[in-house]
Image (tube, rainbow, N blue to C red; front, side, top):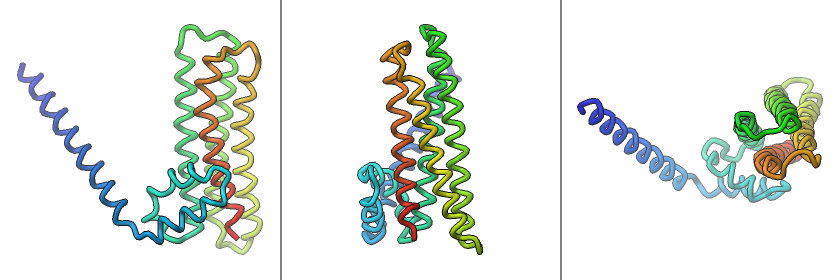
Length: 196
């Protein structure tokens, strides 16, 4: 009984701690100067998925401030997080018992595509870190190439599920996750394209 009480107290403590963190995050975002959030809104207006761009980057306004390079790197990191989550979600499908061999193969290929996308996005961040070097234009071109390759990998993943032998249920579970990654990456690439 004492163990159960201790666990209940611990759970309550963790819940209260979570609420305090959540409220402090909300408080922090309300204190961000409007010029920082407007900066992000204006930059996101140049992207294909402007509302997604704004929604995912406004929480970083106090970090980004009015620095376009930091905004690009932040957008890339958001895309990396999205790709990592999508990879995990797709991997979970392999645990389902009603997956056919064709679906399992498509899922396996998609997981590899998404791992490649994460790698390419990290390479994009690396290239962005070298924009202060003498070969700035070369590094900028590399960043755009790596980000484009990540988009190609999301397309490849989706193409693997477009066949009639893959159930609509599996296709729909994959589609939402992968489309989100493609859109986040597209937004990051658009911001990179408008960097100079």
